[in-house]
Structures are given as structure tokens and as C-alpha cells.
Image (cartoon, rainbow, N blue to C red; front, side):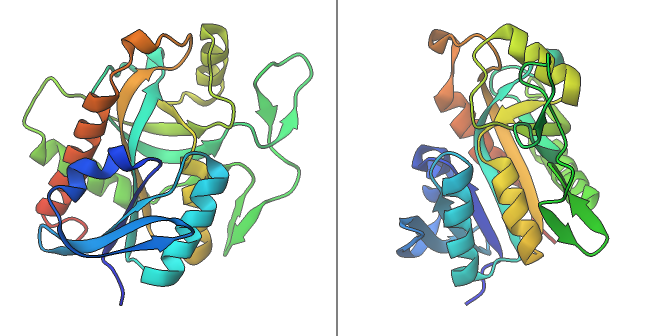
Length: 247
């Protein structure tokens, strides 16, 4: 059976806001992780906890795609926002592209910055990917328009821009500045590039919508707000689906 939308997040808490609204038909496992199937706002939905990081995401998402063959994959959950991006706790970010910020060739004297590989890691038609995964602009605009229509709290900002995926979480302000200076990134995460890679290989449309839980840089867990980010990201995805997106 095909599913309209496969919604993925690194940990189950990031999906609770959607799962609580679902009419659940079954629970199974994909790649060893929990997969919940059912109906949400009139659409057939599969929720999938991938586990954190690139490897977990690639493995689990591949297994799920083989099982449910979705029409669209939505990556959601929390992320860190770069200070220069102008987003704060609970704001929403939509990825215009996903950048694997640590896949490449080391640049001498440029800590935390790499140059692209001299060869592609994925080729689809005329598209050759080295470490930057484009996301269909029409899907990005669809998501942006849907959220502008449905999020009535004007204090919640909605940003669109590049996301960077890292293996090593940024823990200094200096490294955060270097990454933002290189990529003009909106958010940092640990899964998006893997999801974009798998979806591109399977020719499945992909969109990524996250909410800010913390600033990228010096780690101060007292300043994090994970529950707010989990809730806002789920609300954003639900709002899209409730309004009939994707169409």
C-alpha cells in the first residue's frame, strides 16, 4: 500500500504532536525503528522515528521507502539556528537546500570548512551532487505559502534558507560564525542531508521543516527549549496537511 506522506524525525518526541492527532491503523518497524501508519487530516500518513544522525536516517528511511512508497517525505523536528539568520526559539525554518558541511576535502588553515569533493556522490539525470542537495523550489514555496496561511501567531517567524548537516555538533561561537559565513545557513542539524540523498536516489519529493530549539554555537543547555521546538514543528507540519498540502 502506498502512503501519501512519510513524516520522519530523529527521535519519537519530535513526532508526538502528530501521533496524538492521528487515527492509527497499525504500528510496525522499518530498519529496526518504530513506524506508525494511519490517517491524519484526511491523508494517509506514516510517521517514522529514524534515530539521530546520517547513518540512522539513511538506513531507516531507505527501509521505510521500500515498505510504504510515499508520494512525499517531510523531515521535521528541532534544529539549532544560526544567530545571523534572525530566527529565535520556536520559529520555523524551511530548507531551500541541504548541505553536508563535513563531506569534502580539508582546506589547510580553514578549521571546520571543506571544499567540495572532486567527484560526485550522487548523479540523477543532469544533476551532480558533491555535498549540496537542492530541494525542489516549488515544494519549498508550497510549504512557505501553507505556513504563512495557517500560522496565525505573528510572533512566529518563518524562514527559508540553506540548512547544514553536521556529524560533529557545533559547540563554539567561532565555528558557528565560520559555517554561517561559508554557507549563509539558516539551521544546523544532523539528518537532513541523508534524507535528501535517499529521497533523490528514489525520485521522491522531499521537504524539510524544523523549529528552533537552540542557537548554533556555545552549548548552554539551560537556554534550550526542546518542548517548544517539538510542538511548533509538529504544528507546522500538521497545518500543511490539514489545509490539503501536498496537493
